[in-house]
Image (cartoon, rainbow, N blue to C red; front, side, top):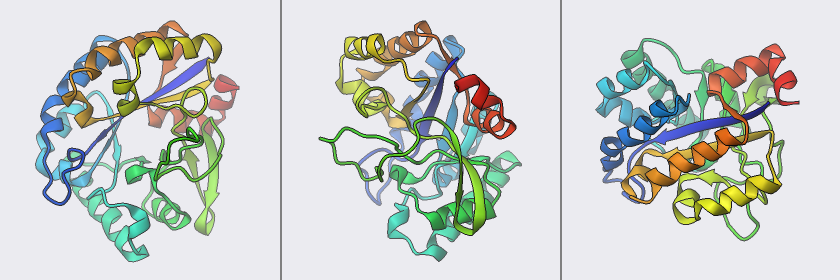
Length: 256
């Protein structure tokens, strides 16, 4: 069985700096219409400031999708002190519990920048999995979150203080080319179709942002990409499903 982890990062619009705008939040319903039509489970990595501004919208999304953490303020964690990291995570947990009445299981660091101290904090606050690490990336593309080669399928990882979490890597297609919103917008669909003729990785991540829907090129391409994945035998699973199956030993049997 081949598995696809579909995820959406919901945050402020790209390149808005400190004066944050959220036009992508209003347009992202079109993404979820596509997911609902094709019956695709997905995990939403959401920031705390979105939870603050749109609690009713998030509650509605939580009826059909897993809601995970994308930090509170979307500040790059490599620019924060240990105490600032903890304040951000704690602030997110507080607003998450206020809005949804539970605690998140998954975490994705802004721009995928994560370190062993953050892993320790994730364990402290009860997270079960992380999906920050980018295990491969095109050599011609500099990327803030790429920290070197890592496993391409989900695995258990032990970090600072002996904390063990499931890592769900952000695994791309061939040559480190990701199946991500910005790339999907720019590359023709036939390019991905050809890649799947030659390579069908047993695990792949499909990721996008709420603001991807603002680009009129994205939505029709997303539908076709999802159909390509399904036609190539991929089963879609949420982060919670993947982490639970790996922890129980089922994922090794499924993906191996």
